[in-house]
Image (tube, rainbow, N blue to C red):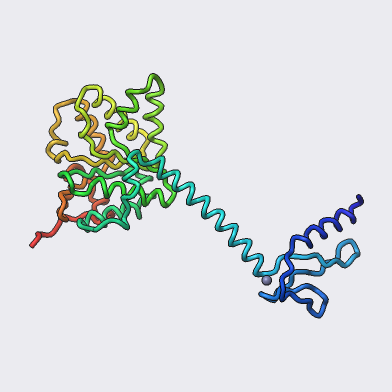
Length: 287
Ligand SMILES: [Zn+2]
């Protein structure tokens, strides 16, 4: 096959791939025109001294093809995000904790959480997380999961877990324990739910310190929820806990959460910049 024959065969193949629809017509130059969008499905080119009339896509078919391409990319992205969410939540029921489902019974906390998501690029840069402390049932777990879900929607890999699970997993491993802990730092955000709910043993406190310290060295944000009070966080006698909590003070913006729209700025370290950025304010007196 010589060169011109190759060109002819390409042109014939292209011509077959162009659909001819009822309503298509020939214009004054005998070129095929789309009946829907009135743009040409055929053009004129001079190639090596010969006039050719190769077929091409009209405007509406080009748009259709682009739309299909975008839909494929979009559905691929949704699949990826669903995978990310599935991987990221050890407790699958928490995958459903989203801002859309937030009843905003604690509007200030909801606002702060949304502001945290909005400012996440800054939080990644500074490695700043949140320490949500306060009484049971004040919505700390819910709001931490909302943050993770919202960030996953934006394509940030997040891991939401707790120390009971981490310790269980590590207990069943013969080797690769440190690798498992290090892998937690591959996530842009690590959420540890319910710190201090796990069994209080020397072994667990050692693991907790290891995980928190490893996260600290990774300089990536960490969100911790806990039912501990500020006093309990401050006055620890156990040396491992002291070191763990001192790391948390450095890494996390402390927010006291007390349910029924009562919230306090944690007084654990100097975080004025973040209090302002995340709209954390001392609540006004309830009527
Ligand atoms: Zn068309």
